[in-house]
Length: 94
Image (cartoon, rainbow, N blue to C red; front, side):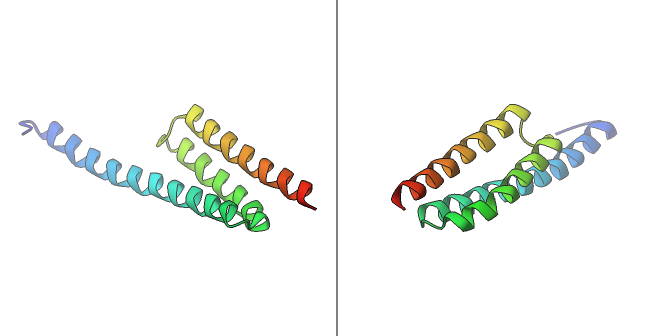
């Protein structure tokens, strides 16, 4: 256990920040799952509508320092690739 006042304060601050980071990270994961679920269900239009929202959530997490910039870019890139593949398959099917 911490002995000094400043160390006790740091513990309190870390708890608050950890909670905030968990909330942000959880909301990003939820949005990604919604997007992936729409793709798997074949709802391309729904996925297209969700994509900007997912990107915005990831960018907000990056700006708050919850996830690293490169991690955010990698996630966005992979989601965009999945969306583009689904769109291409839809074009071929028609």
